[in-house]
Image 1 (cartoon, rainbow, N blue to C red):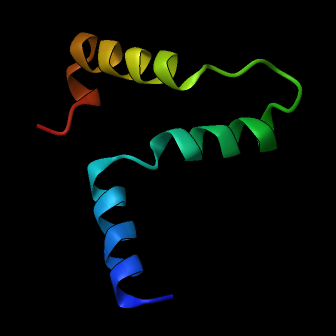
Image 2 (cartoon, rainbow, N blue to C red; image 1 turned 135 degrees about the vertical axis):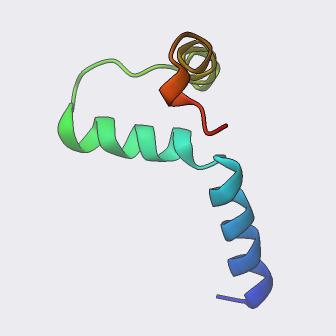
Image 3 (cartoon, rainbow, N blue to C red; image 1 turned 30 degrees about the vertical axis):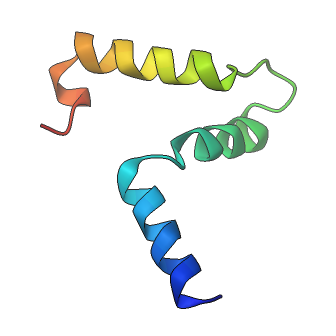
Length: 59
């Protein structure tokens, strides 16, 4: 892997952009066959949860 690619992956990780990918992998591994949220619904739920639960926010 090139250094540029590794740096870009790190930026995506820090920004939380890989969260939906991790969600899909988790659902496939631990909840196969069950419905999953679409990407838009996933981000909406995450944002709503962060507004409702102070501990779900980083700051």
